[in-house]
Amino acid sequence: MSDVRKGQFWQKSKVTTTTTTADAMPLHNQLSGQDMPVDIGSIELDSDAEEVDLNHCRIGKIERFETLRNVRVLCLRQNVIKKIENLESLTMLQELDLNDNLLTRIENLNALESLEILDLSFNSLRKIEGLERLSKLKKLFLVNNKIVKVEKLEHLQELEMLELGSNRIRSNRLTKIEGLRFLVNLQELYLSHNGIEIIEGLENNRKLTTLDIASNRIKKIENLNHLVHLQEFWMNDNLISNWNDLDELNNAKELQTIYLERNPLHQDPQYRRKIMLVLPWVQQIDATFVRI
Image (tube, rainbow, N blue to C red; front, side):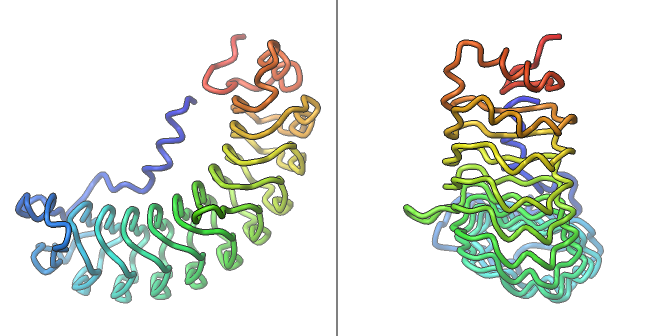
């Protein structure tokens, strides 16, 4: 698996098969008029639709969705929505995509108890909140917001994927791995591009198969020897300098991919050879497959 994998997660939850689209809208409504959000009443909705894609339609407000009683996938990506509201009637909804809007709070989601996938990436959220009733949630995307603390996730015990990469507010960043002890079914955790200094707080996340803590300030690989199911470990662009740290991964016999480039130990002329000596079962080092 190459670097393309990173980009895939930044585009997660994109609806590819739709029943309702905004293709009939005038082009000037879709692409121009920065100060003129589109009234959703001008968009024809199919009341029987199970998948609705309103991507990049300049919708300014969530409203008039009461007729969508059967909708299971709702994509509102790349609009100008400032508030999560008026979704109470969508009790069948399983996937909600609000990626790339103008949201500042997570709110008014209590009625969506069937929700399994929620994408709130690329907004201006400062806190993790308002998710207490979403007990069936399996995938949560909060990429590139202004979140500085992992909290209020204890009710999401079915969560399998958590994406919190690139969260920062001015000079402050997510600096600590915390708030994950109840997520015992978590399989994929993405915390890249933050200000984390220590690997900790993962004692109960024994099902992790993917751990991405690239582009942080971590100096030591530690507290990971219990992650025996780890398959992908992204640790590039940190401050790892001691080769003995790799012993922490000796129990991860399923490890296939490891990224350590642009750490101090990457300067070692025997860089790849030393990784293969400690972790001979690894199939990919950085973007290059291991030759057998």
